Length: 490
Image (cartoon, rainbow, N blue to C red; front, side, top):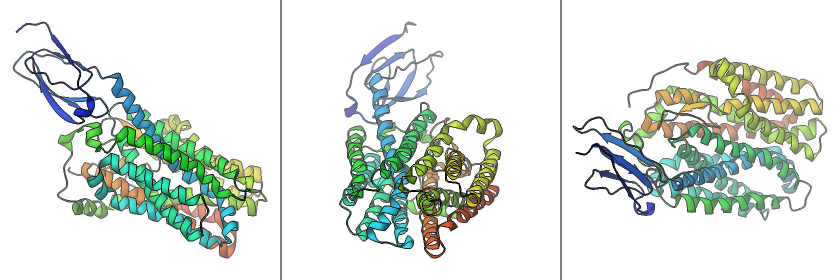
């Protein structure tokens, strides 16, 4: 056999082979598109995914040590970044929802003549939709695939925003929030899972999509505040409706109705153990004590964040004499969250993630006590922004991807996800994350609702002691989270 390499290049449309394995040698070379293959006496299995990237597993033969180089196509890279942008738009809408409700609560309350308890139903409605998404995610994913399911999430959001624009009676608005929560829950889980599964530099790409979440949460209070004085305040929802419609086009053009395996290819398939049934997945998640402890931490964290973000404007207006422009203070809080995600990474790495969380929680408690005691509007605004910075890092916690050797950042999941990834079998890891996230969303509805009920009875000044209690509960839960564990047998 000649020692000089034989170079072959074939051009086959990607759409004809979304996720198929090809084997080649010098005699037969059905190769995926835009891939240049050099062979030297080695039989190689090449897998090409829908995004145009290859995954290979070498099968050495009796020939001498040889090498293979695979040049990925520029087309594949563009498709991957289009997918990242589509996922980022999903999280932008999620951030928009989180940031816009607080400034609108006083206006909605006045328009419908509602008590604090009744207006709090909106938090419960959104949570109900998110819980439905968490429960049905596994079931629907097996039937609709990744592309179909993330598109369904976009449709639900577009429908809900279209219903919210005319300002129908409040019960209709509450039902629209259920639909919106369902769509956000589906898209949040799918977008995070997809980008986290990318093999090349998922940390940076996760940072991109979650910076868009932060951008949505930062911009939406500012825009919502512009509508609080208008008679047609509900026209605010035309903006997220337009973004949701654009995202639908992006999702369909990028993902179609392909499964995640077709889009990404089989990744470390030898390490993934299929469950004997969906019932086994649910059972193992629910029986894990460590998962439940992490869920409690997330319950308190999301509860604290949503309670503060949802009632901050009402507190400033009624307790500190601010006007409806107090919505800008809400924007400052979410801006702090966004800044904390990137600005404190160097400190966290130097001090250590576990130790630094204790410091951040203690500082956040101190700032809340300061807001509780001091009635200065500017001082309170600065304190809220700093609390956002500190809580922002609790959102940006490092987790090892089950699909690669990289680490990436996942907002909305506490640092306990590090431990979760080490103790949960890979085939239930996504389900465990969904369970922890769904319990967190329960906190995001339960505590704002209870806060609204207490505000109705005792006044809005109860907000600060409630937040101090939630942050204290987070501190206790953090102490109970195992510091180091090993993964159960897969």
